[in-house]
Image 1 (cartoon, rainbow, N blue to C red):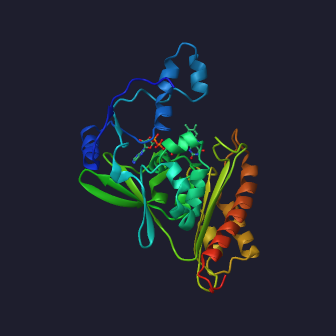
Image 2 (image 1 turned 120 degrees about the vertical axis):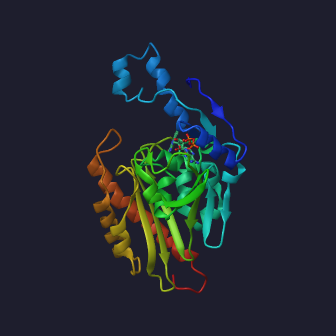
Image 3 (image 1 turned 180 degrees about the vertical axis):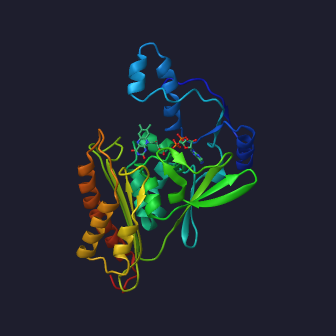
Length: 317
Ligand SMILES: Cc1cc2nc3c(=O)[nH]c(=O)nc-3n(C[C@H](O)[C@H](O)[C@H](O)COP(=O)(O)OP(=O)(O)OC[C@H]3O[C@@H](n4cnc5c(N)ncnc54)[C@H](O)[C@@H]3O)c2cc1C
């Protein structure tokens, strides 16, 4: 890939990275670079003599200028890496790779939807390079780890030179490529709660099995009480709105019910009503609505099965 020249700053600690951001208001963060470096490329394509200006505009390329400031690399910062299980939640460092999420026994057991989302992202090469934090901060409505994070109620931890703060992932993602990250801040880690008798699943619809941006993605999480009733649920839809959509109506329709087929069907219909898809080159609005309903039903069915089998032996299933 041909790239414009740019400067990369390589901090050796989180504090040094935050100082660099503070000293360079025009700096951008570089994690795996699988989105960022692609973003930087159009500046070269636009200036290439073999791409006529009209085509560059029509293809939507050329909107990025050469980076005006340096890139601050997060690559060597050990504090931002890895998954840890704490009493009631998993702490995922922002630079944990997508491949690590996909293969984590911890996630497979407690937060399956996130492991499945990670496994569905790109190719092995992209998963080995791309990071969880990068997928969230790139804020694409179809992002395969972002959608499960919304369903699972993820909280993002952000650090600034002089302070830290927490924000729910739902409030963080404002629109395609737009996030509530303030100047000088970076995402350090993501906190994901987990519960006994919880099950979750992620399903992605594309026309190919690999290297496909979702036409529709659905993540579902269900927590049951000892009697097998839903005490908490989260359903998030990807690629059917400007941001992943957390379906409040779907959660309300399930709350307090034993999630049998009728309850799941009603919840899937509620999800369809909450989707706001457009028609584009990947799929029509009508097809996406149908698929939201179908995938929500399947994802909820899987999540409920997993929640039941997560119940302690002898408990109601
Ligand atoms: C061939 C290919 C296929 C792909 N397929 C898919 C797919 O199927 N599904 C999918 O969801 N995505 C896909 N992607 C997109 C991409 O791989 C993911 O979004 C990836 O997880 C981004 O992580 P990264 O570490 O590479 O981010 P980077 O490119 O380094 O950064 C992305 C953005 O996030 C910001 N950022 C990164 N880390 C932080 C942080 N800690 N704090 C604040 N801001 C930060 C950067 O400044 C930049 O704006 C694909 C990409 C390619 C090239």
